[in-house]
Length: 599
Image 1: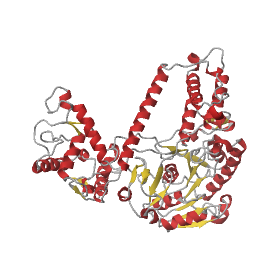
Image 2: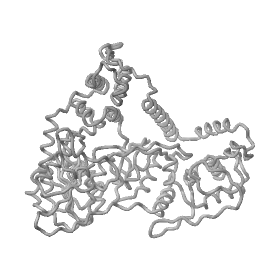
Image 3: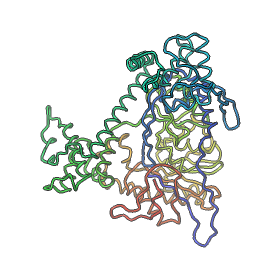
């Protein structure tokens, strides 16, 4: 959960003037175009990237975006634009701006396949070699257009390849435009009758020219598209009732009848899980009249325990928080390793420059999403991503995407005093320093002295100079720093870790209710201490951000609700555009209505 709290003055005092920072503005069109040109000019070569995938956590959820088809240079179509060259860019205060488009001569042109908005001039180019002057003229017209999306690859990085630039330009042009579109509608735009066969041959030839990284990216795209299609069809069948639902699945004892070498029939258990979930989601019409809902739930818990390996406490907690279908989806997602993500260090470099450098080293990456200006997601790499010269120089930090969000919600301002109460290993502390541009003061506190070594190492490597490292018990920081002495506090509290099972599978069987209440008690103490540290009269601050890696209500809404009762504070919006509202009621719990602003 991610909770943003603003301190309020005690009754009877003047209302303080709070200046809650506004979320960072979205980049202008000129800045985005500047991003495109600058990365291409930095020398993006034969690197390969594919679709984006974001990690999720309690601070907020990044919706995975399916990867698009891979272009000639290995970049997915929806992100190829940000690494392609754009001709006619002129620098300006708001970033490079594209030159005016040269209007093509009047006349019919070929139809566009993708999101092309500028018609291509002249007759349809052929895949066969063209005269030199004719190919140069077609390529120049394409590059002079204001919408450069027709070229998905960077021609500047291909100087070492065999063949002329003119031939490659024609190949890219043929890939992006639907040359056979008019023929399909009865036109006369093509001389070949076997369009489909030729397309398949061209695709095979293109795959032969790809590098190993590009081939792996293309194969992964095809696999994801196939999985997405199968999942959509299965969901459609379940919604329409087309699947054959066995309402007597409770009679089978697949886990009690092991197969060879004592191994349970996992395929049969998985099938029964799907059938039971389908019945529970439409219990009135799909149930067996002789079975009760509790029998179905009991069968489902036993199957989930056998298939995913959760203990009874975790299964009960998940099925109480989520509907059966959502709980199964969460367990399935926890079985998949999260993609490697990294954060660009704004104190030393920019994301486009870092992306170009890593791509040249054979790293397959993409921007992490529109919500972050510094994140990159890495799919595969030819070099150890944690041992590149850029990493050693402090140009980026290996950091989970979910840990960006508490810092974004905190939104520290220049020259403020900020406290990170649980700083190790230093990812959030260094992000806060970058947002503050090394101004003001940051107190990075960590109770575990051994973990402070990682904090100090990362601070030095990333060039942070405004941070003081301390080794205190977070519950006694007021004695060291003083009450009402800082502008903002980030409390990424120690927790049970039930939201990061994919990183630590031992959570499936090692947690119980006593562990949850023990963590909740510590979190309440730390949160009250954080509130006491913050000055409610701060002209720019007065905020506390509380975040955990747990999905348990006892560690999230319940802790914040306790602080609302014990201190004069209020819950304010985090400023994040995603995530679900916090609970205002859950089972026997009744919380303050403002907790709906939590995420």
